[in-house]
Image (cartoon, rainbow, N blue to C red):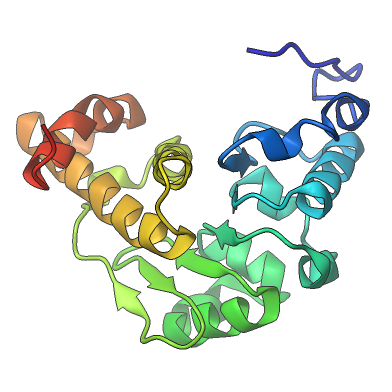
Length: 215
């Protein structure tokens, strides 16, 4: 754990970059976004991490929100990228409305993958996973009880963990979404959909991996 300097409002200071610019590519995977805020310093951090990294990056939550209106930076990065927006975040990235995204989710992921040169996960009922050149893939695991706070953070953490173990960003995205939903389904079976929270899904991850043959 590395302590980062804070701004007056408690977000991470942009001075972090000075300390980490020579270390960033020592990591196997980088997750940017959960819990970071949309402070101006955060936007600097997100942009600089993307520009400096040559290692795979998973971009979620405030990492995505910080790029709304400034997505042109994604055309200049060197790192393999996974983005994990929900419909609202996708709408901000594509400068449209959530209703437009939901009316044609497949077109939205295809446009985002082309525009941002990324593996795109569009969360929601029937989460879509897509990269250029393949057919959009629909995840069939998961349940309505997973539409609660922190679930997306768990998903992005799973994906980053899989990338760090050596899987490609494409395989990590597909497997991560499946594992996440499977853990959510196990949690709902063990309790009920109405009471499932993000920590339940984390605790159910061993069961989800065992279903895939992990020991």
